[in-house]
Length: 317
Image (cartoon, rainbow, N blue to C red; front, side, top):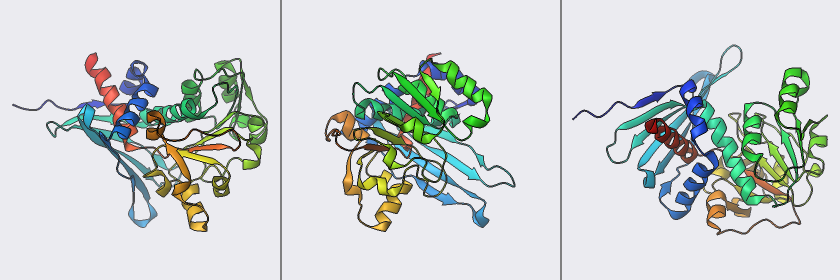
């Protein structure tokens, strides 16, 4: 009997199916699987193209309870102008070894990145957190707001990015998104007094000063393709309470952790917990006397879980 052909879903198909996927619930379930030992998360790998023409990152993962495994490939292709960055996820069956899905992972990457941050905010931010800062204004920043907006009783939301001041339409879009949102005059003003600071940039160097972060405030940070990218100074790791998406892989890929370890005086043992431990309740919660830092590098399991959720939504149709 011939195996059915795998589904191929482009960006438009993904966009139409996403409203049917509960992103935070999908990610929470995968981290529960990781805590239970029914999921496998290998380290991500970076492969360089010859002649400095770019690279690609491989994100792998196995979700045995769902009977799937797969990989997302994300290339960074150097051109004469702006680099080309794409992402595609391949999902396969653990029962038959046959391919199930090949999908454009661009939008899924945005949603799982923001959803992972939102899960961390739900686990780590004070229940009464009311002041939110968002550093960044692109699609990933907007996705962060969509997923985090309903998690706490936010009284004020301040957004800032260098590009935002150059784009009147961008300012208009953010101000129209919610009456609580205000565009700050700079990163420092955005962060002043914030309970949660979401760093949502593609910067390869720090975008905030730790002096702006009050004790008890949560700072979240994501990854980009830039080598050793870090949105906070490595020195911040010495004063913050540190959490990450997965302690076995994050320290070897997060730029500020790699740099802090190389400089001496910091090691991965300083990490208090990861998302698998947080959802399982097996690690300490943050204290109020020091800033909290959550670092996400993006996991293959997040990509596999999102692809599986999209496939289920497509099959349900």
